[in-house]
Image (tube, rainbow, N blue to C red):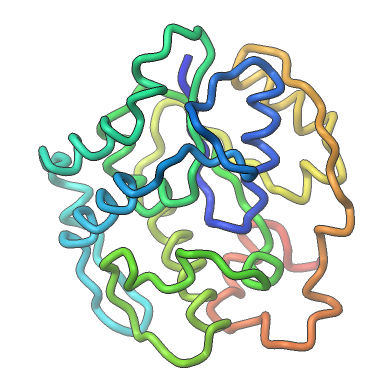
Length: 239
């Protein structure tokens, strides 16, 4: 069984990567402290290949129709296979990988690996954009958007873009959505859901309650109008 995690950087994806590793999954090698498979350059290059086929229509609206209708290019496929070679070549029965940039190419990952298991990892965007991540500036990966000098705004657009690409992609056969906050405050119940989905028991790891709701004491801008619908969809409207 192979599993991958789909979620933006700073969405708490390290917690599920560490959980999977502690539960006997081979998550590739080498890994960094966040549980990301290294080196990342092949994945970054694959993101740039993918971005050539995404049209930016302005006003935070992207057209994914081309990437959804076409097969991954040979260049993209080769880069992903080279990036994942330790996972793909592993004889371990339980294996997978996690790196936030997988989300940037999600539609083509699903086409390359339709039968693996996908964990959608979601975190309140108001917390997610407080820390910096390489995907804060989408243009680094060839994705067009209305870049500004406002770092928080750019991070918010990055969160929105990745949310949109997840929603635009037809669900693969095996997918589950998990909120980071539920992993923090209801870990046993969340692990039970994930264990049922994966068909294997999962180990508990230490979670930090103070990682949730940090935006409430943040003095910078952390709320944007274009978050509103997604906050409601993800169940954050009253939190």
